[in-house]
Length: 272
Image 1 (cartoon, rainbow, N blue to C red):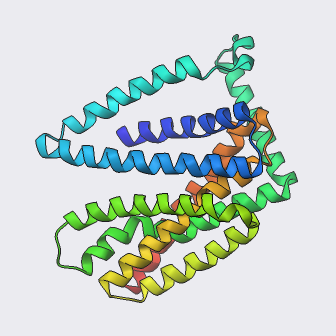
Image 2: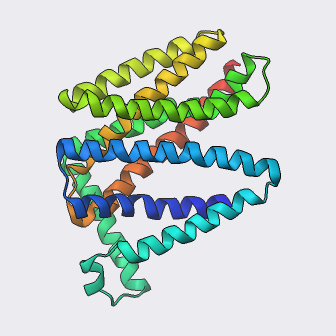
């Protein structure tokens, strides 16, 4: 039940918050790339700090881990209530369930039509789907795979998680420093090719140090790809349906992950 509630809340919040920020700031091209790189960097830093605090609280009592997120969630709700203000929403205050369903259908249809008509948007969503399909098993199975290569305790996975976030931050810094000078398409294509080589060579090795280094390089490259992909896709979306199309992009990514886990799990049962 908790996972269902978390998934629903994340789906509503992610597209809406991203759309509100972009519509409000009206950023384009390099400024948009930088904004997403900075956002990803802050997110990674906060996750490192949260993970360390969570690990400390867990040593005291597992129940304490839930208290801090509840408090921070209430602070976030208060912040949104005060700061996230939209004149369009204020003017159209009259609504009901039937009107809401009707608007949802209209926006969904408009979103699909926009994707069909806009070639770059279609390509970017397919790119996200391919990335999610190809690499989702890695996010699920990296911890047991790395554990099988060493006799160390589970503590090493905790430090791996911290290193993952550090590499995401380094990837954001590389993007901020160098990649804005290069065409986005070249950065995305070259990063994807390197990702494929990294994952392939890591999967063929049983050397612990090499596999860890390759996996951390993989996370560094994700720190470059994700902000560019988000910024790129938002350039082709109009303000009125931005939240809908950002959610569509996320949805197709989730579909790719879901299909990948089923297919790769089935193939794993056959060939393992």
